Image 1 (cartoon, rainbow, N blue to C red):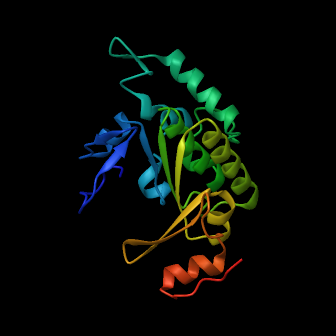
Image 2: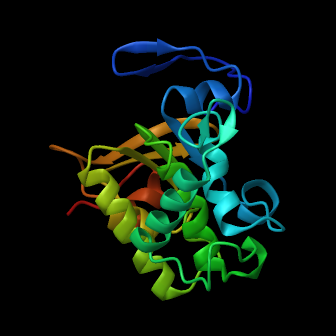
Length: 206
């Protein structure tokens, strides 16, 4: 969906239009953002500053004027992101590697919010963060959804999946094997999710 891997089959449609996504930049330009599962190895630039990590997603657009860096715009974006997402940091020039796991995750989310995504894919969004940071990330997800952003959460934590999802698609061996929640759908419970994921034929009725 994000264009990082070649699709084996299927198509991606967004707002009634078929998307051609050969690389991540194609997805980003069409309003699709992806928060990786491994923020340290594949997400953040740990030796770079908080400001650089947030604004790198908009270089070439909001952060450039006449081919030059718009430092005022970068400063406004960074300050607003830190405040809105409640990133606990001493200042915008602190390196990302100096932050806690929860604040690193919020920093990565801030980077993608900066592009005003239509679709935000979150892969294990609360992996390796404390309870307080989890609650704040859930708040951010809820606020984005309320603004009309489509949120796709990939998570191995069943309570998390049930707690923040309107609709749940369960996959087994690379294929969708069931749908829970949504209008008229079966109640999403840990038992029903596991029944679908493991191939058990009978789900627990509510």
